[in-house]
Image (cartoon, rainbow, N blue to C red; front, side):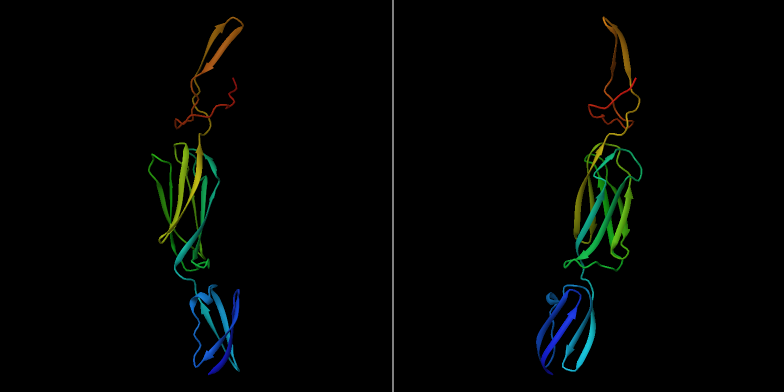
Length: 188
């Protein structure tokens, strides 16, 4: 068959010359989905499926959390191919969360309809936690700042002074030993 063929599908429409057979290269069909070919009075359909993992879109929430809190950090990974098609087949995704100087918490999840989700505890140590989502050779890193939790075991001393009583506290820390930032309001 010789002539012109028209190809249309998701986000794509083009015409191409046909000399005996129709050859369409993969770079012309970047969007996964159902395509239709019309050549003369003949037509047909075919499907393009996503390629292997080439990209991971990763959301980590919230950006700041108190230390030593259960299920406070959430991570959502969208598994995509190199053309940003959502990979609908179940795909393993590994999540790692670690503050420097502490062992990483690791969880493996399998994506469902292109999305993998995890909830994790914040670490006991304050600092910049590295939150990583990895699928295949592709990994994406986010930073979740872990701050000191509520003050715990406040120690204070009171001494008489010329104008009344002078009250001072030891350095204020949370129950895990993280220093609470200056400016924390302490009520007596």
